[in-house]
Image 1: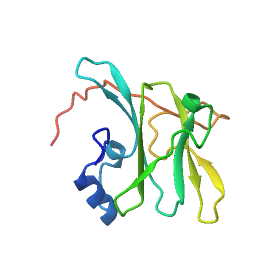
Image 2: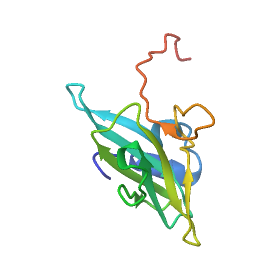
Image 3: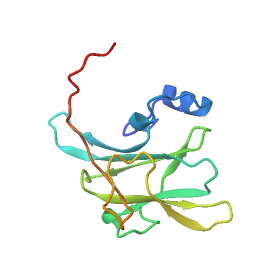
Image 4: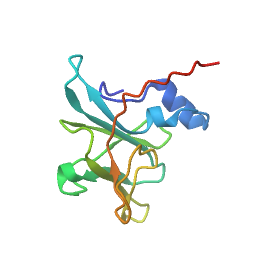
Length: 136
């Protein structure tokens, strides 16, 4: 797998079986940082098993579906791409090419933040929140 991926072999296996119980940790937009804390970029992944092609569109590429095409990984319909030098606050969507070759823009179903209505883009975000309750 790609070293900038947020997905591992076990993620792909569980997604393929429909048994992944923490999809929000595997799919969506994840800001990746260097050891010193500097932003390396953001990893994007989405499940689109019937897509002909998928790309990330947004502020970073003037909403152009040809700038950041995603790569299909595994056999369960996951697409991913790493885009360097972008982080929290970036607005984005997934441009999905359907079986009949039409392009349709979709908000990220695993987005942790979105624009305020009536706008519909997803927003890259990251949280430093630490839960204080104990796991049972």
